[in-house]
Length: 167
Length: 277
Image 1 (cartoon, one colour):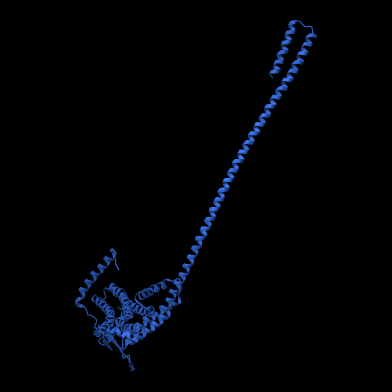
Image 2 (spheres, rainbow over the protein chains, first blue to last red):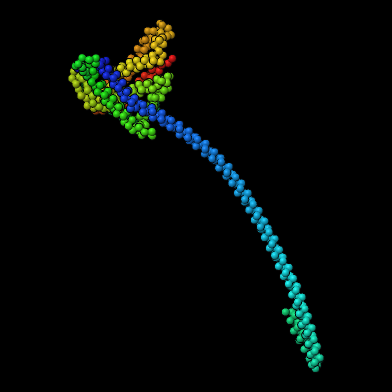
């Protein structure tokens, strides 16, 4: 059976029924799950956002705290550093002074020893010269020598004495 | 929307058109247009019922699309996850597009969801049936009271190319909009709407309301059925030596999508007009 192209018949009733059946099925399987999912997703995102906001606030506070602590620590460190520097300076100065003192005292000691040594040497020289003169004179007296010999002998003895003294 | 063609595409399209026109002119005197155009296959229900005569092709295609959409919906629910897969994201995009449209237009919050259900179902059904009109397929034609089987020389027949579907949906939208209005305003206020601003306007208002489903249904019907016939004629012009795939695509996909959007958009608009206070 054929009909004209533009027609209106019982098909429309079936179409209407199929539309409502389709709508029912789609509400059940597509629209409700979709809308619920969207709502759930929105709530989840909001929760996450709030959590993230809180976490950010906490992080900010802790950052401030840690910055404050860091500053304190910096101050402490600089203080300690300065103290250490001063102590080192003091120590260095005191060490210098002590070394100076030691040097001075050793110099003094050395000078004194030199003087004493000289005195002792002079005294010993004097004693030697005296004994020499005494022996010479005694020999001169004892030995019978002519004047030439006497003089030569005396000169040689004196030169020896001079060499010794120079030494 | 801006459509830009590259140089190669322009050359291909213009070459296609030139070859098509040459073959069409060459064939012009030898063409026999199909005789069955303008006639459809109908079946009379043997048992006494309110149905009377039926269009079997429309019913079969409606059933196919029905099953297709239902399968898609069940598949959607089965694989529902908070982080969407590609398929889920696509369906969600379409649905949220319709939902936002409804949310923007409908002034009363409690009617947003029912309107969304109606308009989204309309949109999905019409979209699927129009898209089938862009794909080559099997259809039944009629010639000299005989049934002809068309194998892939025409697109799938879409249910929206039948006036029954469109008129039913348009009238249904009209009824639903008035039911919503009565629910929201009450019967008396709704009746006052017909005689406002002046009782003289009563026939005008009634004609206006009746014109709505006519324009609503005929717009979709004309686009889809006319596009289908035009593509068929253009195919016969070249005796299928060159198949105007571009035109199939244009009428099936582009016009089909636009008309599906327009139909559901108008449904939303008609409902929102009735809900305004």
